Length: 462
Ligand SMILES: NC(=O)c1ccc[n+]([C@@H]2O[C@H](COP(=O)([O-])OP(=O)(O)OC[C@H]3O[C@@H](n4cnc5c(N)ncnc54)[C@H](O)[C@@H]3O)[C@@H](O)[C@H]2O)c1
Image 1 (spheres, rainbow, N blue to C red):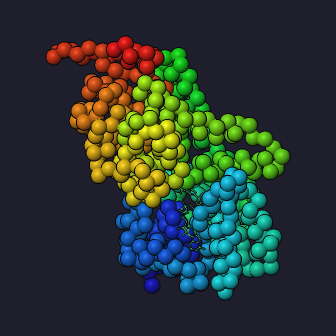
Image 2: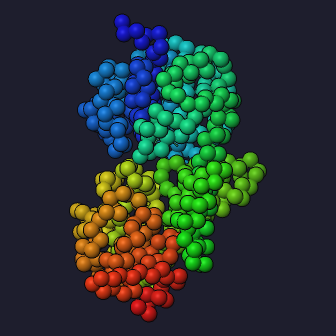
């Protein structure tokens, strides 16, 4: 006896993606008895060997800890799992071509659970599903079965997922019955966070509203950035001062090539499709989505302008394929939209990413050069585009990169993450919504860099 028995919950996690695996290892850390089912044969084999199928800071240690304590184990199929009190679904909910959510994996998982269940249990939906999904499930699939349904959306961020798991801003639970609520409260007892209890449909809406709002902040600051370029203001300083207002907050106010990843793009499209289907035109959200797509096109156009108006024949190094730093996830990454646009315009593209080269190879066109390191990627290139704010990009040897590049030595800093000193290495440093800085004169004792309002005209004169 460990003394934990009364507080332990037996949980089955369905799906070992970033959400399912972090949740499984997180609950195991809280000494619940967790089994995680992963149906993908390759992913399952990797987990069964004690390795991780993707990179997430701190997750390997958490999973090893769970395996060592005996609180965490893996099966390939729901049918192989022992009886549990809670089954948490964390399977993918991708977009369909029309923007609606493909709920195939969710419904398949629920059917498997219904076939496997031998005793009363709670299904907790961690996957992001449109408002109304849970109530459809209750009416059509779970009717008359001893299964309670709970909506329990997840808000963790890839790259900081383990931290977010243990320090969430809130736990949201949509439940119809006090029994179901009680089990979920017990499951989360070790995690300190405000608990919001509401109806299933309302909880489902919280997740979409959260992601749509964050995406709106990103598109909003990108619109301000574009205007800053036109009037000669600096969006970084604007965002810093605007974000200091606690009513606004500084998070998600970094101008750049727009949001990507496995959540914001598909969730904004889903909310938009859902609004249309309900006869409501969500105009603000439509604009958010359009601004985000425009931000990629604008990046390519600015690069073309800096290269004298054409990309045909230009050699471009793209640094950063992951949709954000500290992950190897490339789903809906800006680079996956920008690279095809560059290729389409006739540029040759070499890529480098500190973590995501494996994922990049599986999704990028074959005519992209996958470099062995960052300096090889930039060698002989006319331009470098930085599309992920990996911290190591800021401390690269930019003198060395400049020496290996070809004229006109353009660096498009699509995340405003590179140091101001780039101009001193003789590079044309284009940023998003920030004045370009380029070298005006240099003597052994004195270097002057000048902010330039309309970069292209000034560069030509220099
Ligand atoms: N990734 C994030 O940052 C994040 C954050 C919050 C919420 N979400 C939401 O959480 C859900 C999961 O996201 P993800 O990125 O972890 O998904 P993912 O697609 O990366 O992983 C899902 C996993 O579930 C497995 N799976 C599918 N059906 C299964 C079944 N019947 N039995 C066993 N395994 C099964 C798949 O093989 C896959 O490995 C999505 O709805 C997503 O929108 C994701």
